[in-house]
Image (cartoon, rainbow, N blue to C red):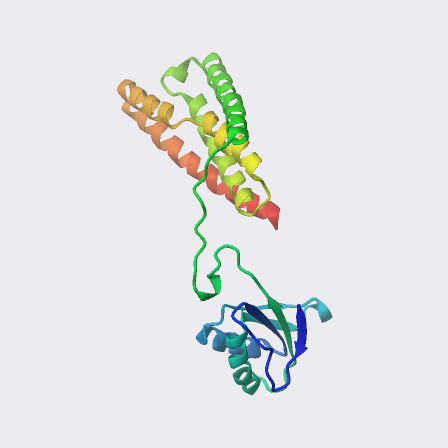
Length: 242
């Protein structure tokens, strides 16, 4: 990687596989807004801004990144807009492995997922534990409340708790705080077996036959509580990640 200070000259002997990053130390949010708007109009690959830690966050930096020829063409125009702003240039040779034509607009197309023996083992292990846990909860609800046959709140409970857990774990997965093994065991295996949509539908129809009010309350209540639990799981997971 080579570093340059740009002073009305060329950035580098830029080739198609060369990416250049220009960093500007700006003096106001107005300057930042102007240069980023121009960069977006010129179609640069990236244009971002953030406050640095110096002087309590008083400094503002704008970063632009693109292929060397594109950024080299843009820098003279940028210098006219902010003539007295320091600009630092970093040039780096890159090789795109997936896809190889990324800089010319190519898109990454992942291979279809194929579960191996290890993945299946984790899913089966989580599934056995999840199904067993659901059976214990549903059996306990029937033991505690004889009315569970008419209003199966045990199944409602596992579906609501499962909705909360899947939403929370899904948020952690999207933020890369959980790995593939945890996804296989907890999400696909345990929670996939712990929750049950088929039993929910069957019990809703059976409750409806006994009492339209209880059937509607069970079916609609399970859906509403499940959605609320999912939103709560997402909110709490994001709050913990801050």
